[in-house]
Amino acid sequence: MSNNYVCEYVSPIGLLHLVSDGEALTELWIEGQRYAEKSGIKGEKRDNLSIFNTTRQWLDVYFSGRNPGNSPAVNLIGSPFQLSVWCILQQIPYGETITYADIARQIAIQQGVLTMSAQAVGGAVGHNPVGIIVPCHRVIGTNGSLTGYAGGIDKKLALLRLEHAAVANTFLPYTEEELFKGEKGKR
Image (tube, rainbow, N blue to C red; front, side, top):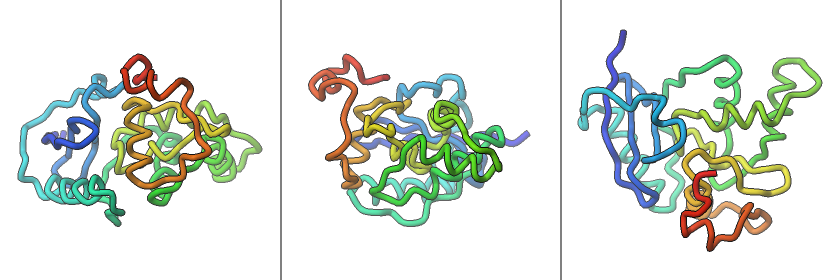
């Protein structure tokens, strides 16, 4: 069994927890993110791993508001369905968005079926273990709603704004004032 190594990164949206198998990034969680507790962010603290250095450099560029280019190496572990969804997430260009329904259509084509549930796609997107780098924050509702981000809708909106994504035609399922008071930040 391989070891897990961990380190932290202080970002403008909160503390990030990075987990690696020693070669690639296996998890990246925002502090307090839904599902992070289940992953067991445990391991030997090892700040100086090459993959952590690469990831910190990538995050530095990203949080400066620039496209950081190629992502650090990731090792995603999940079901075949989850892996197919996460593969599509990795193809969403910086500063652009896609809908859950768009991903469902792509999965249906890959699997040779007529339809695929957007809700099933949403479940896979929500359980993405490497947030930000595997950009699940770039997925929005078909009607333009900014829903379904395990790190909190406030973080999703902040990441999309940082990328200068076109959010003019999107909307929050509640007011921005409620969002930033924390009343609904964990939907």
